[in-house]
Each structure stands twice: as structure tokens, then as C-alpha cells.
Amino acid sequence: MKRFLIVLVFVATGLVANAQLFVGGSIGFSHGAGYSEETITVNGVVEPDYGGLGYNPRTTTFSIAPTVGMMFSDRMGFGATIGYKQDITKTCTDVEKKEFDDKIGLSEFDFTPFFRYVFGDFGKIKLYADAKLPLAFASSKMVYKDIEDDEEITVKEKGPKGFGIGFYIQPAFTYQFNEHISFNAELGLLSLGWYQTKLSYVEEEEILGEEIKAEYIEKDSEFGFGINGRVPVEFGFVYTF
Image 1 (cartoon, rainbow, N blue to C red):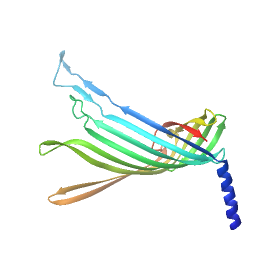
Image 2: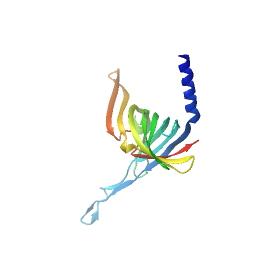
Image 3: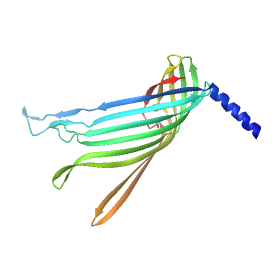
């Protein structure tokens, strides 16, 4: 047993000594807005009380997903990605004043360890696949206007909490610019696996002097292609030490 442990330590030391450390990741930002305008004309005369201008919800999304890993050989390695994503959607409450007072914010944190296998080496271009085990945690908040005792108030509520877990294999490729820097693209559209999400929230209210507490749980499971909980194609850069 002692000899086996000594051999195991030497093997592990050799692997670490020859391993290549790499870091990378991706940053994303998007903002969407717009409006729709409707005009109704009867016998050539514009009807002023019909139609009008309407504003679409304004959605802003920010995401960051740093990655760190080690390649123990030209073919195999492992690592982990820590991601954060925030979505904020604002809804127009007053068209004339262009006020967007209703807001829904969604925050998501995920930790995804992975095992990497390179199955194609064509010089500067390498094809690989990651076997990933994502764990995701999400929460949401709502802010909106309401009327209470004939006064307008701002209401803040916590929305559903979410949890996600899955397993999938995702193909990708990398292009080597130089000895240290490379560009990579993960093909989430071609990923194959399983992913389950769970939403839970609690509602409390008082009816006829009695407090009632209701807990709702919703589970959703998916299996098939494109099950990666992210986007069809994601780009990033990798630095290898």
C-alpha cells in the first residue's frame, strides 16, 4: 500500500509538472428597445382618439463567465467556469412622459466544472468537446407602481427563486493566434444532454383575519440537442501559460 501511494504521488507530480494552465472566458452585453405607432384613418381623416404610440419593454442583459483549467496532455484536461448573468426588463407605464417604472430583475449565478477532450488537431485549429455538469442558482425582484389608500406607491417584491442542474456534452473549436492566445467558440446548438430547472416561490396573504401561506414549486426537465442553458454559439478568448 505504501509503495502504491508513493507511485501515485510521483505520477500526480509528473502530471502537474507537465500540465498547461489556461484561463479564459466571455463577457456579453445586450440592450433592446423599440416602439410601435398605430394610425387609424377613416375617409381620409385621422382619428385622434384611436391608435397612438406604444413603447416596447426595454431589456438589458449583462453576463460574465471566466474559465480556468489545466491540460494534462495534448488531448485531455479539466476546468471550471463561474458565470454571472443579469437581466433587467423595464415596462412603460406612461407613454406621454416616457416613464418606465415597472421593472423585473433576474440574477443568475452558475458553477460548471468540465472535462475536456481534444478529438481533432489541425495545427492552429483544434476540435474538442467538453463534458459539463452545470449548477445554477437564480433569483428575481419586481418593482412596480400601485395604488394604496388613493396614493401611488412603489412596491418591491421578491420573485421566484430558481435552481438548475444538468449534464451535457458540448462541441467546440479553438483557433491558435500565437503561443499563448487563442480564440474559441462553443457550439451550444449542438450540445447533447439533460437539464432540469426548479422554480419555487411563496405567497402570503390574509383572508378574514387568517394568514394563509402557499408554496409553489415548478419543475421542468429537458433532454436533447441544444440543452446547455446558455446560447446557440458563444465566443471567447483563452490565454495559455
